[in-house]
Amino acid sequence: MYRRIIKRFLDIIISFTVILFLFPLFLVVYILVKLDSPGKFFFFQERLGYKGQVFKIYKIRTMYDKERVADREILKGDVEVTKIGHYLRRFKIDELPQIINVFQGDMSLVGPRPCLPRQLEEFNEDGKMRIKVTPGLTGLAQVNGNIHLSWEERWKYDREYVEKQSLLLDLKIVFKTFLILLNGEDKYIKRPNV
Image (cartoon, rainbow, N blue to C red; front, side):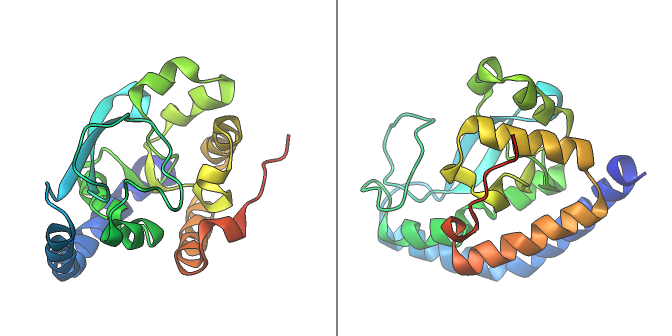
């Protein structure tokens, strides 16, 4: 019942409320991004969704507007990140437009982070499990180390999420996400049990 009906109902209600509530913030961020560097405000990227369907994810541009390798991990201090982009990334504000993806149904509030389509070929058995649920804004791997974990470790957490998905687990992940926003990802690194 939760996985099939309640979760989607909550996604629609919460995402719609957040979109209305955050609209003034988006206007301020829009001005800051445009003042900081030339280029588009939104950045679109193809990602892998539920059952392997490809969709376009919304992000706020945090890097200088030029062609680059699509799947390079961006770490702290990267020279291609703009001044305002550093803060947008640190507090995950660049990910907020994905609330539109949640409202549209491409994503959920909680679930494995949507990866690039080419990664489908690289999935191990844990990785293949992640597309059995709708991808999320935040997930179990994200609150346990995110980019500080290997892909195999992230996929292990994704599999655990798919197998244990519940309202209580989603609430725990959302709560821990807020702690990470305040304190930073590197304070919550926890390797998955082998």
